[in-house]
Amino acid sequence: MAKSGGKGINLKDKLDGNELDLSLCDLYEVPVKELAGFPKATVLDLSCNNLATLPSEFCSLTHLVKLDLSKNRLQNLPSDFGRLINLQHLDLLNNRLATLPVSFAQLKNLKWLDLKDNPLDPTLAKVAGDCLDEKQCKLAAVRVLQHMRVLQSELDRERQQKLQKEQELEKKREAERQAREAQERELRKREKAEEKERRRREYDALRIAKQKMTTQRRRETGENQKPSVSHPSHPLKKECSWSRILLKMFLLLLLGALSTLAVCRVTELQHQPVCVTVNTLYEDALTLLPSHEIFRNILQPNSQQ
Image (cartoon, rainbow, N blue to C red; front, side):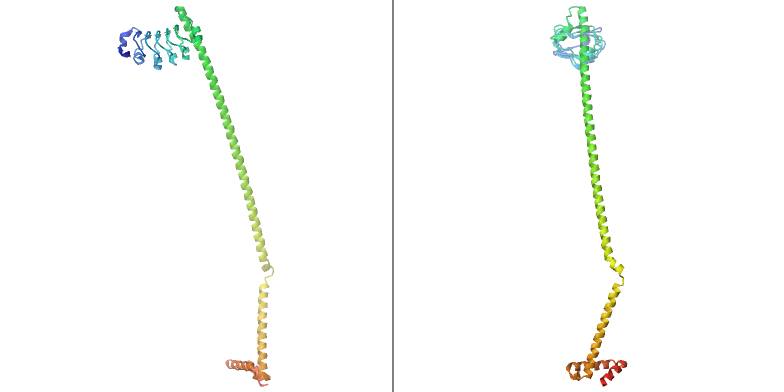
């Protein structure tokens, strides 16, 4: 069932053989889904209705051979109208069409066309001409198809040129991108080489500095060790010198002590306080050293004298 103006339409009642007559049904829209259920209805009459547009789904009715859309309010046809490739007879009389879709050129089987009483573009109106008899309507179909094919070729050429320009532009952008990437790679490579050279110079400078420090340390160590290596007997000589000096001082002290003792024992100074002390120490020493007979024998004669 199809809805139109609140009334239900039974399509089966409108079907007569392969002809489906939906004219004068006050239709505001085409019942595409219902029509698709009648693939044997190759002739469809939708004239004298209130159709202002056709849905894109209408172009799926590829079984249509004859289509009457005259005396409606159509302002345009679907862009994929050319899908109706089996269409041979098309009546668009008395609508509001100014142009036809470019896909119209694909209606290769179209043999009859009526575009009268439409506000057509002047060029299209001139190409279509009149459709006052069968011959003129057939000629209109041929001429309009040729015209639409030319438009399609021009459109395809423009589309191809546009595509080519876009491809060239894309290639140019790609080339620029590659050149930019190559420049960036070269810049990074140069920066990396400069960084490597800088680090190498720093490494060489550090190595040279270390070598200089090592050489300086060796030189200083060599100078410190050179006296001990060249004159190994110096410490021994110093030790011998100190021993001799100590021995001499001891001998001098001993000689001084013996001289003082001799003076205090022999001379008239023996009664002086200093000599009394010296003689007392001497006597104590003789008492503490009874075993030193030799030393006593050496000193005794002196005391007796």
